[in-house]
Amino acid sequence: KRRRTVALKKESAVLPKPNKVEEEIPSTPTPEMDSTSGDPASLKRQKNTDAARRSRMRKLLRVESLEAKVVDLETENTTLATKLAYLESEKVQTKETVSTLMEQIRSLEHQLICANQALT
Image 1 (cartoon, rainbow, N blue to C red):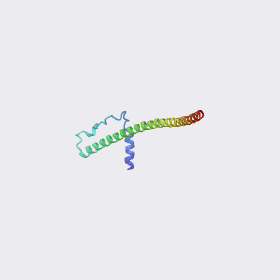
Image 2: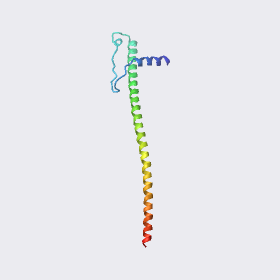
Image 3: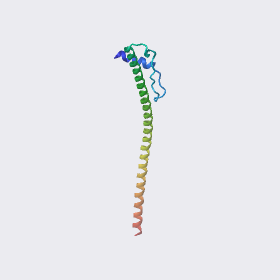
């Protein structure tokens, strides 16, 4: 397992970074794959190597796509957290305003009752 991991790291270091996630992964045959070699085992190994390379490339593209999505979601999360803090602050201020206005209403109602009693 260790040798395979090291080999994967070496190969991934050699692979070029794709510019877009949507890029197609080319299936270009190598010179060793021409039908003149005649060795079916060698041909099979080469096809397997190419398939593994394409698979690693797809994995890299998938990882890059996920990393970009993480960045986008973190940005959105920060934006939403800021908006939430603002709205919570606004809610507190609104509650205070409502409380003050309710107190004024009670005071005015009391004054009205007293004025009515004084007139009668």
